[in-house]
Image (cartoon, rainbow, N blue to C red; front, side):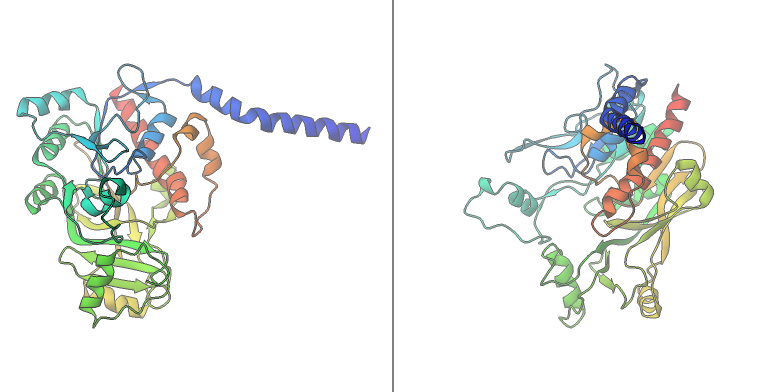
Length: 396
């Protein structure tokens, strides 16, 4: 009798496990759609994976945001910016030729804007992605200087943001839209408009600073540091690199200068609970160091945990150990600035069609091999979902 009960229980559990994905898909499929017209701008699309904004599309799809025609947003079609064809040719779609009237029409038409990455496309990266275009030209080294093909914030793109602001429509921007290659004039204009000021510093965690092992270290980073430090590069562990727009490079190595090897994003308890995000999370990709004033609220901060040696270096170059990760406008209009490559997560759109999958994946903890995955599930996805949900309620 006992064996029979165990067998029945085993069959029930097996059926539940087998039918769980179907139930999750059905619940997603029959959830209400939410119509919202969204202007997405991404100028750093080197292939059709659209890595710089596909995670934003994942959030849209998972929460069932749709266009006016009730169709879901397609990651490699429904955006402005740079469009590679996958074979080495490309086209662009932007606002360069738009008139003032055109911008007003767009601002009236769209409900929100999201500018992801305007760093752009450079000749060397393009050749490395499509070497068949110049088969006799050797591949370039990662991070070597090359001419800009396309990128940077333009006058009309800033103009659209201003018009969306005046209409009190949701604006979400993130690094990199005002650092290089955006002009100083437009950067200053953006800073004045939104009260977000770039200090001139950007940074990034590198899991291995040993040049004999990590071949993905940017050549310019190594060259500039050595040029500024008697041709020495003594680093063998992980660490954080800081780069100034003057080309100054500062390196903090784990244990030598750092007590914790990653930049950490910390969020106050009440804020973390409201947005459903992890109160402490590691961040491993590019970020910029910005300041803001009292008209904005800092939702989360980066923290760089240094020892006494690290403190002296940070103090010498006036690099703060605490600085904003997410900035929000307090009132007047809905505006958010993400001070990092938050949307740069290569994630499968297929998983966005299963309701509650985010609850399951939230359990992913930080590890050296899953940092970006953990950041998406435990921070970016819940933060963005809550921002969109709050705004949609206002719209409707």
